[in-house]
Length: 583
Image 1 (cartoon, one colour):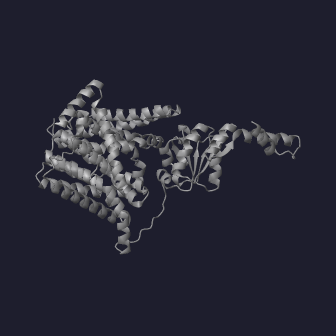
Image 2 (cartoon, helix red, strand yellow; image 1 turned 90 degrees about the vertical axis):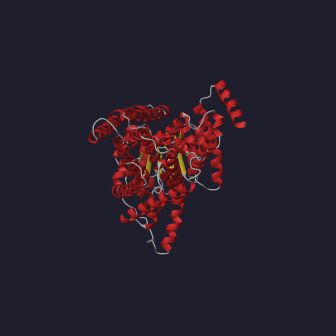
Image 3 (cartoon, rainbow, N blue to C red; image 1 turned 60 degrees about the horizontal axis):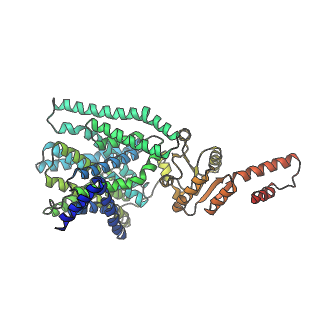
C-alpha cells in the first residue's frame, strides 16, 4: 500500500512543480549510481558492475515510483538512446584510420578471422536452435562484437594503453567497428519484405550507406573542418564545445533520416573529426563526460533487464555467459597466437575481447525494430551482454598474474617488449621524461629549439590552429589543446614529463593550471612568465620558477646602456634588483 500511496503523492508533487520525468529519472539514476559505486570501490570492484546493478535496482525493485513513471515509459528508452548516441560519438573520435593502417595485420587478419569464426559459429548455433535466417545472422554478428569502451577504459585504468596486448586488442576492435557499420546497412536486406528483389534492396541499402558516408566525409573536409578553424580562432571554449555537440547531433540526425540509426550517425560524426588536428581538443572537452555517458549507457542496460522474466532461467544465463566468455577468449587467443603474438599479451587481449559489447546491444535493438525477439530470448541476450561486459575488467586484471604463472612453468616464452617506429599518436602515448611547452609564441619556439638541440623530447600544447597544422606537418609532437584543461594534461602525459613551461605571460591561466599539474606530477619542474612584481609573487607561492619579463628587460637595458658609457663596473642585476624591490 505504501508504494502506490507514495507513488500517487509523488505524481501530484511532480505535476505541481512541473518536474520533467527525464530530469527526475536522471537525478535518481545518478544519485543511486554514486551510492552503489562507493560501496564497490571499497571492495575494489569495477564501477561498470555498479552501473548495471543501479539499473537493475531501479527497474526491478519499485524505485522508479519516486519519479512517477514505469520502466516501460518512453523516458527510459530516451535515456538509453542518449547514452548510446553520446558513447558512440566518443568511440568514433577515438577510432583512428592511421591506427588502422599501423595495425593492419591484427585488424584485417586477426579481426577478420575472429569475426568469421565467432559470427559463423554463433549463427550456426542459432540456426540449429530454430531461429530464422535473419535472426541467426544478427545473433552471430552480435555475439562476435566486443566492448571497445570497456576494454579501452580498463587498459587506461591499468596504465597499459601501449601494451602489445592492448595494441592487438585495438586492431581487432577497429575491424569490428568497421564491419558493424557495413552490417547496419544490410539489415533492411536481411529483414523483408520490401519492394523489389533482394539484390535491389541490397543495392538501395548500399547506395544509402555510400551516400551517407561520402556526404559525411565531404562535409567533414569542406564544411566541418573549415568551420572548426573559424571557431578555434575565436579562442572560445564554450563556442567550440557547442559546435562539437551540434556536429554530433546533426550527423546523427542525418543518419536517422536515411534510416540508418542515430547511433551509427553519431559514430560517423566522431569518425569525421577523428583524424583532424582538433581530435585531441574535442577529446579533452568530451572526456569529462565520457564516464557519465558510459554510466548512463550501462544503467540504461540494467533498466532494460526484467528479472521476473529470467527467474526460471538463471542457470541458463550463467551457462550462456560462461560459454560466450570461454569461446570468444579462446578464438581471440588462437587467432593472435597464429599471428605469433607472445603469450602474455595474447592472454590479455583475449580477456579484453571476451565479452559481447555496446554495438551488440545497438544491433539487437535495431534488429528488434524489424522483427521483435521473443521476450525471454531478448532478456537473456541483454543479461548475457551485461554479465560478460562486467566480467571483462576482472579477466584483464587476472591476465597478468596468470601470464607470469604460465611463463614460470614454461608454457609461455618470457615476453620482452620491443620498440619500433611510432606514429605521432603512438609517440605521444609513449613519450617520457619530456618537456611540455604550453604556447608556441617566440618564447615557446626558442625554448623548443633549444631543448631539441639538447636531445630532449618535447610536446607542444597550442590553441592556434594554423600553428598546430604547421608543427604537425614539420613532425613536431603537438596537441591542439588548452593547458588549463585536466584532460589535455592527461593526454600530454604530464605524469611522465620532466618539466612544463608556460611560455605565455597570462598569469591567471598559469595559476589555474599549476594545481592540476601538481596533482599529476608532484616532482615536475614548472616554469612560468610574469610581467609585474605582484604576478611574480603569485606564481612563486605556487612553487613556479618565474621568468620576470620586466626584470629581464630592465637587466638587458641597463647592461646595454652601461656598455655604451664604458662602465663595466656597474652590475645590472644589483641595480635592477633594488629597483624592483622598491616597486
